Structures are given as structure tokens and as C-alpha cells.
Length: 264
Image (cartoon, rainbow, N blue to C red; front, top):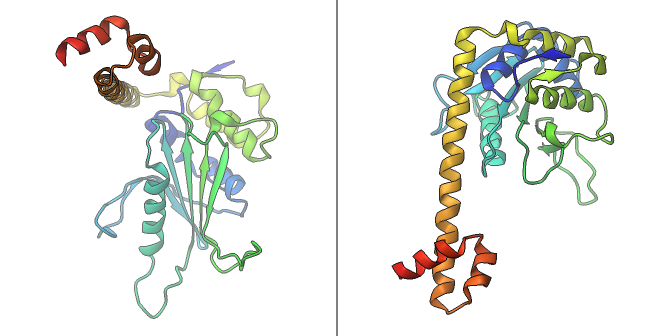
């Protein structure tokens, strides 16, 4: 058993996947195309920006044929499909410099790793930009794709080589891995890169900052849900609904309902 830092932390994910060998092996297996990467950029931005919002890509690399963006998101948000579609479009549009040619010289693949899961609970989903006819046959005109990975939902039915990578990412989340369960050399190199004793004080501080930020966001989310439940309870109290039914519906206690009734 090897003790590692969790890949849910952006600084840890970038530490591992900024290695060109690890990045290339991962991207090649996920995209299904040969990849040759010499350099991986972190916190990549385009200058001048494309559009009104200036996205920052966690990991960005390209070879002579492909432009690959890898982003990690741990906290669940309601907009990650839209957000990373925008990121993807920025990486496409930045390549088009003249109206005479709208075809980007590089194929763009955006891989989004959602370590905390997603409401759809599917391990792999794809936004495919290629046109299809009404029978679903692709025209093979546009190769660009956005691929969403949710390691939390990997199963025995998840096809290889996706499954080994998703299992490996998910395995790190409790900060210990059994490296004997993995065959790929790149995954063993990944585990070594994020060994707990290989994490610098600066990286550890960044992990702590992210942890506290997530705690704060979760607290705000729970406070928002409580406010919403109380608003529903007030409305039901005003209609004369029985307190035990309101308690069961909203999850509020009888004492909380009594205080709400006093406020009315």
C-alpha cells in the first residue's frame, strides 16, 4: 500500500499530469489517438482573451495534430457542462485568425475530470461535435470532442483503458493506493509523483487552502438549502398544513416549525 496525496486537489492533479509521459499516456488512452507531447502547460491562458470571459486551463498541451485540454473539478456545480463547453470553444476559436479559413489547424479535445461525481452518475460521457444524419451516422467532418470522466462511478463494465485510469484516480481520493492492482507504467509513475512524502510545503499549503474553500462553499450551500426549506415551511404553515406533515416534507424539526410559526 502506498500513501499518496489525493488527486481531488488541483495542485496535486497538476503535479502529476504536468509530466509529459503521464499526460501523453492518459490523453492517448482517453482520446484514442496517438499523442506526442513534449511540454505540458499549467494555468494556461490565451492573451488576448477570446470572448468576454478569460478561462484558465488547468493543463494544456499540443502536438502537431492535436490540442488537448485537461481540467479537473472536485466540487459539484450546476454549470460544469456549460463551463467546459465554453473552455473548449475558446481553444477552438483561438486558432481561427482569418475569415478565409474557419477550420482550426489542430483537433481540440477537452477532458474534464469530475472527481466528486455528477448528478447523471455515468463514468464517461462525450460531447461530439461531428454532424450526424437522421439515422445517427457521423459525417466525419468535425473531430473535436469534450470528454467528461467521473471516476466515482467506474464499474467492471467500464471499458479499458478508461477503467484503469478512472480506478487509479478514484483510488487516490482516500490517500492510499494498492499499486499492485495496476498494470500501466504511467499509472505507477503517477502514484510515485504524488507520494505523500513528495509533496512540498507550498503544495501542502495549496491543498489546505482548497480544502477550506470547499468547506466554505459547502457551508454556504447548506445554508441556502436551509433557507429554502424554511421558505417552503412558512408557505405550508400559512395554508394550515399539519406540522407533522410539514416536518416530514421539509426535514425541519418541530421546534424549528414552532419558531417559524411565531415569526409569521
